Each structure stands twice: as structure tokens, then as C-alpha cells.
Image 1: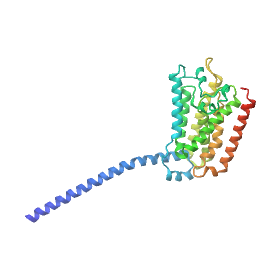
Image 2 (image 1 turned 60 degrees about the vertical axis):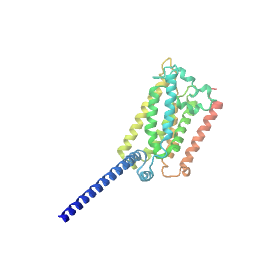
Image 3 (image 1 turned 135 degrees about the vertical axis):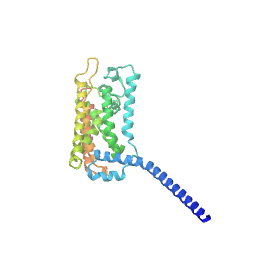
Image 4 (image 1 turned 180 degrees about the vertical axis):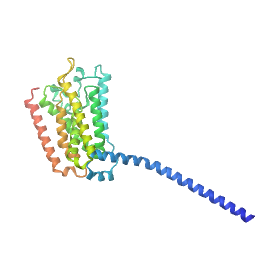
Length: 303
């Protein structure tokens, strides 16, 4: 009897021990699942981004070293600054700015104005001021949807270089081809991102998934057509109580993107400064900038 009783006690102890071990294993598995959930999601996001932003030969390299450090700070910071300036003029200033550009906004120290070209910061700061809700929403959506994935892949320094190159090209082109009109909006920078991305998709079309390539091109074309339509309306069909705004920045920003932007975005796994295409693009861009400066000093009708 005593032996049987001891045997039953040993079996109970073993069962309890097995149950405890099972519970511990389940807890460890749950902790591992929770810990691995976020990295799995991040990897999935990086895979989607790589398909949209990169040709197939360099996707593996991106996925091997993909991380969100640093996060896409440049595009998010620029977008917050533009939205903050818009809210300032739309809400706190007594102007009807919600739907369309009011003439009072043209007194802003940020806007590019032909009469105040000697204030050189205006050639860049005009990107902070927008012509209405439709204008700023269009630019914010485009630069966030396209800019954040680009910055995840190429990081903020390269994306910032392309964006600001488009902004400066936009104001200088406007001062030449539409010299008597004011300029607002971040379209030069946005079109630079789209131009660089468009050229990258076009050149590497066969290396990308065809359906994705076609969809990307169609999306870019649709965005450009709708945004250019609004810009042309603001330039040539402005209401009597409004002020016409130049649209040359859109075109110049696009060309800046298709030159500098393309070389930057196509050098994902290469040293940018060692790529001769980059220096050719920089030389051409610098020549255009010098000509624009010369034109503004000596030849501009705004003088």
C-alpha cells in the first residue's frame, strides 16, 4: 500500500512538473510572438517599399540593411512647416485663404515676389506658402506618399538635395519665363521628387514588376495632369479679385528631378560622389543657376 501511495505521489509530481513546463513554454512562445510581430510588420513594409522604389537587382541589398533609422524626418518636417504656415495665414490672418489665394497673402515675407528679388531667401521660402486648401492638400499628399518611401530607401540627405534643387530651380525658372508674376507653393520640390522617381521607373521598367511599373506611371501622369490643370487655372483664369501665380516652377522642378533626382535615386547601392552622372547633372544645374542669376541682375523685365 505504501509503495502504491508513493507511486501515485510521484506521478502527480511529474504531471505538475509537465504542466508547469508546458505553461512556461507557452508563455515564452507568446513573448516571442509579441516581440517578433513588429519586426515582421516592418519587414513587410520594407518589402512593399522595395517593390515600389527599387529595381529588382538592388532589392535584396535594401532588405538586408533596411531599417527606419533615421526615420523620414526631412519630408515630415517640411510638410509640418508648410501646413503650419498655411494655417497661420488661413486662420490667424484676416484673409479668405481657405479656398483660393487672396491678394493679401502676397505681402508675406516668404512668397517669391518679382519686386523683392533682392531678398534672396524668397527663392526658397516661397515653398512654405500655398494658394488654398486644394493647393496645399495636393502638395502634401504627393510629397508624403512619394517622399516618405523615397526617404526610407535613400535617406533624408539625398531626398532633401533633390527636393531643394527642385524648389530653387522652380523659383529661378519662374523669374525668367514668368518674370512679372509671384510664386507660391512647394510644387517645384514635389515635381523634382516625381521627376526623379518617374525616370527611375522608366529606365528600370523591365527590371520592375510590369503591373507595378504601369500603375506607377499612370499614377504619376494622373497627378501631374490634375495638378498642372490647377496651376494653369490659377495662372490664366484667376478671379478678378485674385492674383495670378506662376506655374513655371512645376516644369523646372520636374526637369531638376529628371536630371539630379534620377542620378541620386538610381545610386542606391553606389557612392553618389563617385558617379560621373551625378557630377554631369550638377554641372548642368549649376550652369542654369548661374544664367538665371545673371538674367535677374542684368536682363529681367522686373528690373
